[in-house]
Image (cartoon, rainbow, N blue to C red; front, side, top):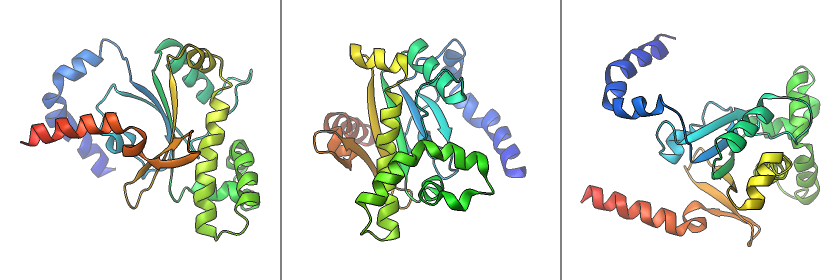
Length: 223
């Protein structure tokens, strides 16, 4: 806790003053570019991975980057998605899984979660992905099977996301796009789902114009 408290003091004394104009603008409201849904795993930092500033991402986190299908039950994920898409009109939604995901290990072996009944029930929302992986990945070793499940789970949560009313409306009008990503903690690689290829490919290949423009700006700033 000492390090965390000291970090707050450092933020107030240094970072806040450096970006004071930004924080004063953000105090008036928000208009994030993306709803970013990812795992609660402490090793994942969406703003660091995407190099975004405060106000640019509306971040939702939970064990396994789960999106429950829409229902009449009011849960935190459902309410937050409704607000981000219906009120803030985010133009992009990213569902981002990650390597070595403990939640996906649990989804693959739910019998090991008997002492954690709420976790076990929550990961039931990933059961379809686990069943697909067990059948299609039966010949794989444990590591490759886990990697397959991580990807299958991202695709399953995208399907769940499309059942949410405001998401359906925004998709139908072309005002919002959904993106499926997987982040590799060890290598720093980020793969994005390409629907045409039915495969996860490097972000630079999925968004060549965006990445190219950003690199051009960076090179110009360095020069």
